[in-house]
Amino acid sequence: MILRNGLAAAAVLLAAAPVIGQPKSSYPDPNEGISGNPLVREGDSWFARRQEQRVGLVADRAPISAAVRAYETASEAADNLEARWKLARALNFRALFTDLDAAARIAALERARRAGEDAIAILQRRARARGSPEFETLGPADVASACRKETDAPPTFYWAAASWGRWGIAKGKVEAVRVGAAEKVKRYAEILIALDPTFEDGGGYRILGRLHDQAPTMVESADWVSRPEALRNLRLAAQASPADFANRLYLGEALARGTAAERAEGVSILEQLVKESPSPVRLVEELRVQDDAQRDLARAKSTASR
Image 1: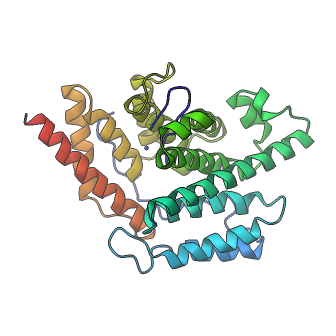
Image 2: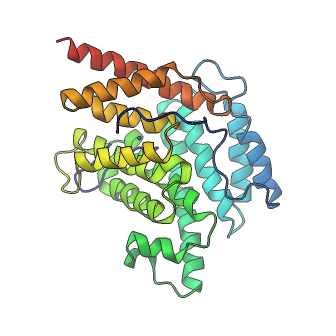
Image 3: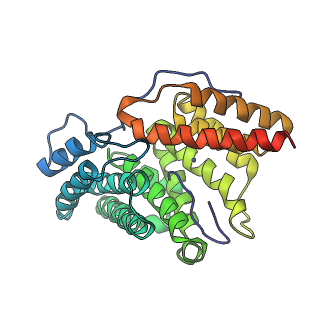
């Protein structure tokens, strides 16, 4: 995932094998059940149908493209924060799970990145109206305090971090380093942790841990990157949501590259993960996670046999 002084990390954008809990049924929506913009509600309806007509691990473009169109139209309203983070979420799904070619995938992630930044700009504008300094002058905890009452703040920072990370990976190291993508991922994940460490199944910990884990494989140096921090954050994500497929995939992957004891733990986590039934409402996402876990298991066992 990244960087010399800034590349990207996916989140995505990432103890012993965790105890398995109840599978989640949907993405968290802080505005669920609240009447609002009808275009956002239309987008939500299409987003809920994103699994329809899938072929294996590949989602059909039609439902998610309809969701994107609805959220984009809703985003024409200058202050519609919800529409923008949901647009970033839908564009991430379209980029990762449909059959877009490389150029179209990068374009979708670029749009997601812009939507995330637009959403954060709205949060900052609202905070400034309440007397807060510019976010750029504040640490993560102070940014979190400045927008604590905004129900859309956690998903805004989550999807902004995921979009920056996935865009950086797709775009390539040179461009991602140039714009400081990894620093964006790191900062937004830290703000999310300060806001709500449990949001999106420990999503802030998952993104931050994945960033620390992947950065060393992609850059010459990054003084803040730390394997202990990678494992610490990935374990915190798994503790926050033991049932989450991505939490276990990224923890298992990280451990499988470690000491003999860590490798054994990582293999155990991945073996358990591939045996489970994915959530029917996150079917494409979780089938893809299991496919990655199968690949990682084969790699780990091949390495161990040498």
